[in-house]
Image (cartoon, rainbow over all chains, first blue to last red; front, side):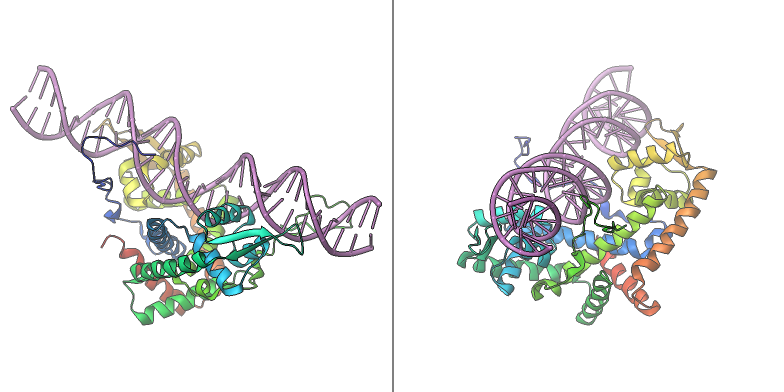
Amino acid sequence: MNEEAGATIQDAGTAPARPRTAREGTAERLQRLPTRLLSLAALRSDRLVTEALARVDARKWHYAVLATLEQFGAASQAQLSDRTRIYSSDLVSVLNELADGGFVERGPDPADRRRNVVSLTAAGKRRLRKLDRVVAAVQDDVFGPLDATQRGQLARLLTVLVDSEGA
Amino acid sequence: MNEEAGATIQDAGTAPARPRTAREGTAERLQRLPTRLLSLAALRSDRLVTEALARVDARKWHYAVLATLEQFGAASQAQLSDRTRIYSSDLVSVLNELADGGFVERGPDPADRRRNVVSLTAAGKRRLRKLDRVVAAVQDDVFGPLDATQRGQLARLLTVLVDSEGA
DNA sequence: CGGTCGGCGTTAGTCAGACTAACGATTCTG
DNA sequence: CAGAATCGTTAGTCTGACTAACGCCGACCG
């Protein structure tokens, strides 16, 4: 919780502060370092995504889970974990949140009582549509500085990197 | 490293290792999502960088600080914070570590006793050379799947994104 | 000259995500 | 049937980003 200063209600956001954008001088070695560029770009991207989703009371994982459920249908948590790359230990709370919102249902799998079957509800589908819109908007936000061609290039290059993972 | 199941001795702890690389099925929506690609690529990159540096008992910020000091000379912590984008609160422990290793010296600024002057030692310069090598090696590791042209492209695109930050 | 404002370094603490360990319950396998 | 493996869950570690507050000092203002 935030203790508000009471007096001036406010502009909680008016951060007068750190000119983090200062960009005054970054050592060259760092400035061109590809891994650093990647890290900074992702940091900014993640921040924007997280903020945008937070505004509608969601998190990245919510989107991932909902989208995965819609595409592949009901699944066990283990399957969801594999498909979304969310650790199953973290998945628990994500599903709790989604279930609290009525977006998914979690019940025991009659076929294998160790498992849960997680399925999308009607509300979940609507929720997904909404998050789709939010996420799409952020893409433009993040990649605004690039034109369509460049975005395509970037996506292709990143895909190569990401896919090289398991190799 | 991987624990091999040796000879059926107990294997109590043999983590057969989650096939995180499984890549079985990722929802399309997610798979092409640029912000996600960026995030995943950065995650992998960061992990490799962190591991490589850990092997020589260093962290990313160590490199950033040493490189910045060499390029701009002795500076106050506030300046370092601006230039490296390390929050000054986090900078404290980084400098402690570097000072413990004898790589930097931190003394009061005679001109302004609020400030510290942080400067690079001879050992710090040697350290920087070493980290330079480590970091360079990781670049090849991370961006191995890309040829020189592609790496250039990627760097350019990312630079655009990163520089759009303050705009 | 005294006071207040602001920059400086530091401590502490929050929050999120990635990741590991262990455990009870269950099912599979030999 | 016994042991091994799987599933969901709890708890906890680690790192990085970020905020709040504080004591110290210097700058500026009246």
